[in-house]
Image (cartoon, rainbow over all chains, first blue to last red):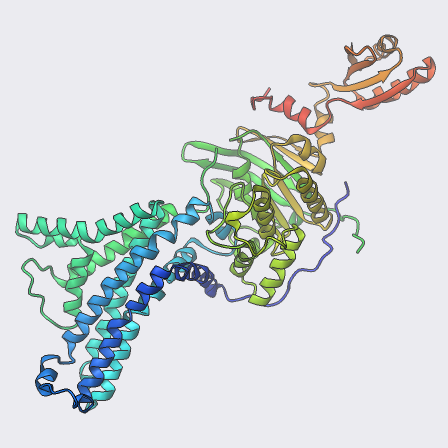
Length: 291
Length: 324
């Protein structure tokens, strides 16, 4: 059989920039996520608190709007001040909603690709393992950002706008805390969720594993602290570490008995992320050895 | 469009393995492989665990050799953007991200290649059309039959217009009609100047479609080249078998035995067929012509009995995959 020269033209036009290609992954993943009505309902509820916060800030500066209610408004205003505690408690609550989100979405991110041998198809293209992980992580990061630091910063700027008088400049630390703390938490939660998804193929088991990492380990850490009268147990608990960091970032004092130093809290978060990345690198591979 | 005749294939137009070995820890994948694969259809043949998938994974840059160098049209995995642009790969196993339709499956991977949305859409439909899956393209892949999955896998492998297509067991699961269509597609692609490298266990199909074959066993390349050439090289160890059907097979047997290159002439049970083993098929055919003319035999058929890839496989690897 004769073999001939290539006789058809190939596409010679411009290609999309390589850095942007990881965004293909979240496109379909997000569609899958929002196919679930349960998740859509849950996600809508995640915006309740930011909306309530918005309302509170507005009313705090526009008490006249509540004149028709016969309440001691000035006392109410003093009882609910818009300060670091207001923002810390809000963002902490939202962070736990992020955890629930990871519990819902995380297990379905990597495991199906591994189960279906999908990785060779991604990686036999100009697409690296890091880009794959980044693409999958983007699904969680975007969903979580929309309910944490993005509304948090919007509320922060809204309060600064209404308060005026240099409030924004005097409280820049609150804005920085919302941003840095949210990112630390959502990176840790996303990476742990992805790592578990890469190693545990069965969704319910993956969810239980995620609960173990964040709650059972925290309980174990607390037990260690009590038994040995030390704070070292806290190194095992991502949630305790994040709790410490929230207080530190917002410039508030953590009054818990076995509280660790700030560096130890950062170390726990960094080690948690590093361990998750290592687990992902062991699992996210282009091939399975077939012999 | 009339295809132009082939020019001589330079190394940059080939898939080249130079002293390539791959070990998975202590386990041998392939060892000391030297190959130079020209355009056309190449059949990669060997028993399970022989190293076919390892070779294919190295061609598409999914794994790196432990030793040696692999280049595809002069490109190496150090230049992934270019290499992957030229290589299309369909894995042996189902590899479908969940929840996607056939169209989304093909289009998503084109976007990963970097094609803009409109271009990717056009290319996806073109590929889907080529594999005859247009009607099912909007259905989820999870609901496809095995044959449809095989086709959509082919579509994603060829959608970005690669120069080298590496297809692991691409004929598995296809019904005879679909198989014939896919083989025609391979031929069309190969005639267009592509490398179509297919692994298969179905030897007669490999024989039917391949311009050349690579036989691999236990991680070593056992033979490589056009199947006729490979068979010719084995004549000394495994004399060629020719089946002749005629009116007086006993007399023909006695006559052909006079030639020194004929090592065996066996009458078959039907009483009209003769199986002749010869160390020189060309000389035998010349001698057969003379004998037939001189003796007036009525010849019904003359056919090679073991010049196909199946016979070569049996001789070199053995039915159980043991090298003979």
